[in-house]
Every structure is written in C-alpha cells, then in structure tokens.
Image (cartoon, rainbow, N blue to C red; front, side):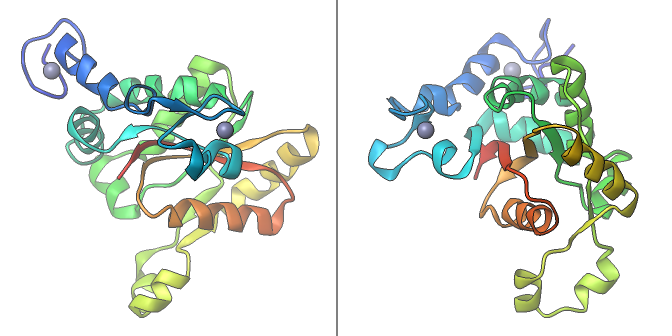
Length: 217
Ligand SMILES: [Zn+2]
Ligand SMILES: [Zn+2]
C-alpha cells in the first residue's frame, strides 16, 4: 500500500517517517510544560490549562502530516484515514472517562461529495474501539435559509440545530446516568462552532460538555 501522507510504498497506512512526523506535531511532544493540576501539555503554565478551564483537549498542530491526513480524508475521500484519526483521539477521549460522544456534523455539501459524514465515521470507530456510546444530536441547517443572512448575522447565528429525532434519545441519555458529554471535531480554528454547539446543548440540558479536537489551526 501507499503511505497516506507522502505516497511512498509502505507496509502501514502511514510510513514510519510520517508516523514520527505526526508524533512530533502533537502537543505532548511540542510542549515541554505540563499543567500542575492535571498533567496536560501546556505552552506556558502562566496561560493556564484549557483542559482545567474549558474541558478542551486537542492532539496537535494543524500542519504537515496531520493536515495531509485530515484534508485527504475530508476532501479526497481517503476513507482509511478515519482509522488513523480515531487512533489519535483515543488517549484524549480516555481523559474524559466514559463520555457520550457528540460529533460536529459535516456540511451538507461535504457529506454529499464524500458520501459520508466524516466526523460521524471517526466517532463510530471510536465507539467500537473504546466501548463508548455516541449520539448524532446535531445537524447543519440547510444552506438555503442560512445564506439569506448577512455576514454579521451569520457570525452571530449558529447554523447548528438539533436533529429532532435525536432529541428524545438525548433526554433519556441525560436522565439515565451521570454522563459527561464530549463534542468531537477535526479542526479547531476560532472554536466558534464548538462553543455554539455547547451553548445550544446546555440551553436545553444542564450537563457538562467537553471538547476534543484533532488539530489546532
Ligand atoms: Zn509517509
Ligand atoms: Zn490542567
């Protein structure tokens, strides 16, 4: 087979050289400091720790091999990357205990061109690997209504909505146990999507919601 990042002949989905480069992009290797409270890698302990402050964990920097894997998966249909990306999530998700996973939905156009929802697939693999549950609670509002809004309105208004058929299951998940919920997404840029997803969820249910991302842009 061919390495998913550099395209050289390889016995594994990622060749050994790319595997090393991928690890070098992780915050675990990039940051030499650790949060004194929870041990999460931090750039500078003075800035505080996003895990302690915001229940946010991410794997590494959106660059090089990590960027190739994510863009190849999202835009070029390299579906095998889903397994590699899920692997990167495992130690991060484990820090949250046994959370119920909520993937950020793909846009309709993304789903149409790929034929699947990319974060939903990674979430499905994670659930199998880690014996967790997930719920596809959110959907992206159809573009038609969304593009009528002005740019500022779009920035203020979330295009995320609840999938109506998931709401009752969410009610029962919330009632059933003391569950933590974890929003999963691939790239964290401004964090707006995730924060709006959390606001939307917490406007309906009084529950803790964390964030887990692969890459920080
Ligand atoms: Zn390679
Ligand atoms: Zn911490």
